[in-house]
Image 1: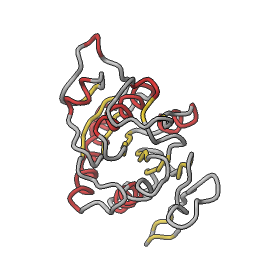
Image 2: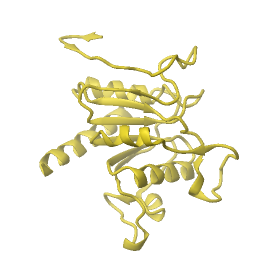
Image 3: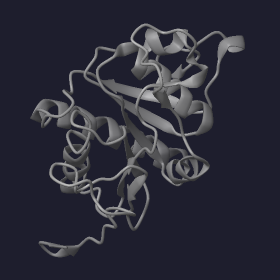
Length: 211
């Protein structure tokens, strides 16, 4: 797909789309990039989930010069809660969030992960905790529900600003930034997108300085 003077090649899905409103992203799909730097992890497809705001964030990052480096992963089982969450308010029976070995590998191939998990605070916290238990990567959390670093640290998630007690740490990865107020199923505001871009650029710069 030619864009100005730059050509981007994006493999958008592994299988057929889901019809009207879901043709861009299918369950278990990754749109791969030439140089894997940033991955945007979205929930399983559904009326309220993809393609917005996940594709808007991906497109905005590419427009800001993160060319050839942004991938989008739509999880195969991205709805519900992890099975090890116990009894959490808002849990839906029969719906379990999880990761396949292939998805873990796909996320680990990148330098920064943007995690988008919707509008239930307890779900967002548990999903972030589960992903970062399996993947050692700096992460940016994007959600509709307000979530703070204390919420995450209480569940054993390492963050850049609040850490769990040493004996309570559960995650390999670390949450570097949180952007709340991003409504699922709708185009994010310019302010939301600017916040995401700034957070990504900051993490990328820090990674570069460490090398």
